[in-house]
Length: 563
Picture 1 (cartoon, rainbow, N blue to C red):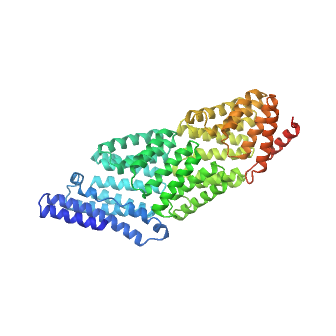
Picture 2 (picture 1 turned 120 degrees about the horizontal axis):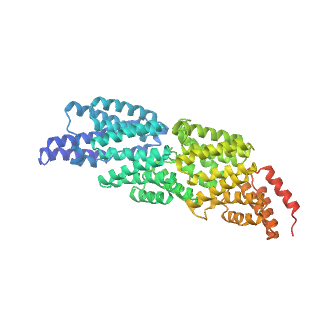
Picture 3 (picture 1 turned 120 degrees about the vertical axis):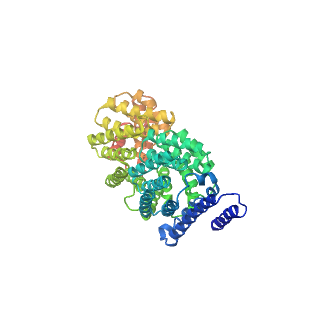
């Protein structure tokens, strides 16, 4: 159908010029040049698929669906803008655009290294042509390929060059695409909110000038949704992603699967893990229908599905997802690609939860190195994994080192995301626990209170993950000998029960039992809570249970017989 339509448009253009004489020969030449670009793109895609290995064959649908439409070749205004070239320049420009067609085909096929090599050659050829509009296009493509390869700093430089050159030329389509990609790159990959949203405003203004075409608005809304999610603006994120999904009418297009995954991320960050799981399952179903089961694009969705399983306590399903995501990525890319960081982090978290601290530290250190190399040492994701390493030190009893790691994580995250972002809550809790175990009760209380404040501000007073800092505050009150003060904090923590770790939940029940008993409130319930904690620890399976917790629980039960 694509080839037949190309021929029909070619014939129609010739008839309009030579038979009906309703358009100029110059416009016909421009139309044919545009059609030749699309034919070159099709030829490049066919060449890529003809020589495809197993990895490239998996991306065949994405290659085909990524071909640009022919409709712009029938738009006289778009064709005539900046196209009045002498024959030599026109030939050079046409050659560059054919190279860019090859770049697009390589990108869609997942051959990032080859695509980046061709994009760099295209930039060199564009500079030799002396034609600035095609140079802006080539810089845009180079930036895309640098981003795909994980070289985010170089990508930002190339995309900025493309944007400012296109602005000088009033090439709004190139500007809009560069601004949208900078929004996503700077906000999500480089973790700089204010600058990212400035690029988003530029992209929105250009989109309006272009008439708000759906094929440009949908990816812009999705990019805005991703950045809003990164920085904790969940209402705005959901609205943007709902709009992107509504605009994407191609039900079997890979982009729709990505939008659904991004929507799942909003549910996940809001603690709605069942809804997140459903969104990830839908995203995976849509993605497999469009691209086949073993496509590397599915790795992110599978990883996120693993996180939803983990937060709901399904450890075997989570581990299968993380392992599967790593398999897809290592087959498609090399072992140092930054996309490997999330599933490796997931495996590290599972190892941590079962008490295998050496394996957890190995995974987390690899994640930190991957992210620091690709995104810089002050990226928020580096802060998050630094927090994980601090928690390992905490569990190992290295309290001073744990405190130092948590302070560093807090510095990175608060600088990148702001001091009120909900991602800081876990770091505050880790720091509070370290200070509590060092008998520094006042600063420990300040950390737990700060965690409660940021979670309540972001999610309201009923957010499940509030249970962790509330349990910390309750334990602090018990340590100070104030069981009556501890009671409402611990009751509120248990009512939320957002603790997938059985050891943390057991400690919470024991703390509440102590508060009830010591305040003479309900001795029978206190004993029952401690027995529930004992049963939970006995059935914890592979989950890690600190020996001191089990011992403390048994001593308390022995010293507090049933009334």
